[in-house]
Length: 479
Image 1: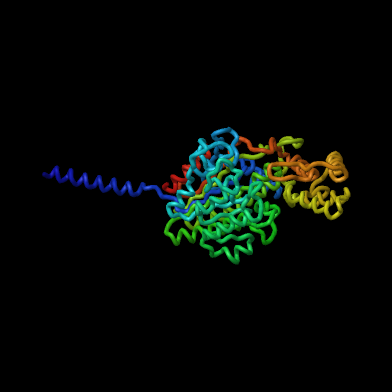
Image 2: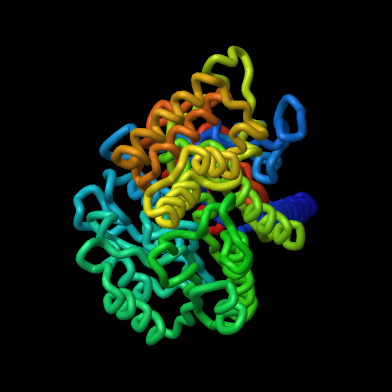
């Protein structure tokens, strides 16, 4: 009997201990999730930005960004189901759903029939507050993959119509893009009206947001309803009163956190905060690309400040959909060196400089003098002032001036812009002086970084895959 009592007591203690241990080992779930995608950003894009910050201060080495100081640092492959070199639609879909698909597809399986339901939609259907934003149009490939299902990424109107179907609490972007044939004011108005009927407040400026959007129940936050507001202005070009990506992320966070508190749930905040890194890299515009990485990092800082207030409930993940441009650090006649400090002399993007020269053409009835060109190049790129120009470089610039301003020469095209030949040459000269090279104006299969902090951060260590990044976020959330 004594032995039986002892055995029973031992069993009770063992069971109690097991239960206590099991309770202790229950993994913490992420309640507040920040998911940042910085489009077109490879490992070198981030490292180049850190060199740029240091070299502006005359220091060799890197000045760490907020994102690179997060406790978990990894890398990710980005291949799609149809190519080792992905486009943003396929990679965006993998980063939204955890499933790879073919290039050009938005939220669709490789059979072109089956919709892929993403984590953002599953979170919304479970009562979470959900928001999607971007520096690009809100129905551009990467943000669209979070809420839409289309065989082709270019069906912008159809993608925009699915914003109300998904019913997310927040949408942000430079604009709502439209494909040719749909790019008429009345078509855009029909989208805005549908969103308003679904309960969204739609704002078109920072002032409009402050006056009408701050206390909205559901919000669509755009930069403006004018042709040049296709995307949020580059960080290097930003002007007072314009919506910046940091403004957008603050608004997104305010709305989602308030809703999560009200509903007793969590939030899933996805933002393509570095959406225009890709634009700048397609243009091989080094200074503008690095400034866009800094813009993204300012958004990571907002998330990190939130994390410090809620460390046991927050997860921050930053990655990219692919690398763009094939960026090389340490190239050219400089030998074993890099001089990104010259980019401090560039005061605007390649696109903004093109607008400056187009305005000069208009003001002079296309009779722009060489002295006027030199003056504008000095303002935009620091030429003949902070940046020394050699005799051969000046000869090359003068030759392009004659062919373009005296004669007639086509603009230089890249995926997202058309630039004055003199501006395109000026940027190439500045890149060469920085000892920084580009191998392409398109995407590459290069590895992209992964940074993580908070609940479940250990899931993102090492060598990731873009689809696995999403699945790990879902695991950290308990989905």
